Structures are given as C-alpha cells and as structure tokens.
Length: 128
Image (cartoon, rainbow, N blue to C red):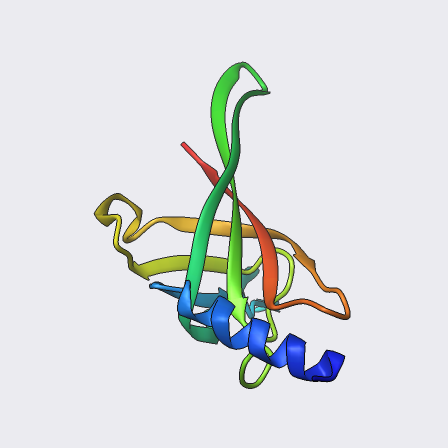
C-alpha cells in the first residue's frame, strides 16, 4: 500500500474517534462610521464532528484577577473538504458524550498542519 493509502486509511480511522460535534464561527465585523460602532454577525465556517482532548489547565493572572485557562486539542476530520478555520475563530461544542462540554465556547489559538496528518489539529482555550 502506498503512503497516500496509509494516510487515507488513518484519516478514516481517526474520524471514527470524532464522536462530539461542534460549530466554528468567525466574526465578520465592519466599522460603521455613522454609528461609530462595529457591526456584523458571525459567519459559520464549519459544523460537524470533532474530538476534544484536554491538554492542560493553568491559573493565569489578568490584571488583578486570577483566571483559570483550560487548553484543548480539537481534531476535525480530513476525510472530506478541509475545514477553513483560523486563529480567533470561536468553537462551540454542540454535542458530546460528556454533557459538561455541550455549550462550551472555545477560542482557537493555533491551527497545526503537517503532510501526514490524520486530522486537522487545533489548539483552543476556555477561560473560566
């Protein structure tokens, strides 16, 4: 079997692990000089299966407030069209085997790509 065949098989198997679902939205704001405010509505750039894995959580100082930041790896499938997600997009968990994750909103901080990826791996943050 060729390398491409192995990668395709790995992507199909990795997609089987994606038992959660999410929606990724991107802010599309423009400045309105009349109101002197930013107007716009979020645009959905991806909706479908995903896999969430906690990476680490840390307590960080923000001004005089301590904030707990949880970082996640989120995998999106590469078996069809590649999702066009980007840094600062918002990911909302819409379904999960873990009900505590449903409704959680994560901020995408990095999209990692490699030649032999079996999924699109994204790092995200959740602040509480």
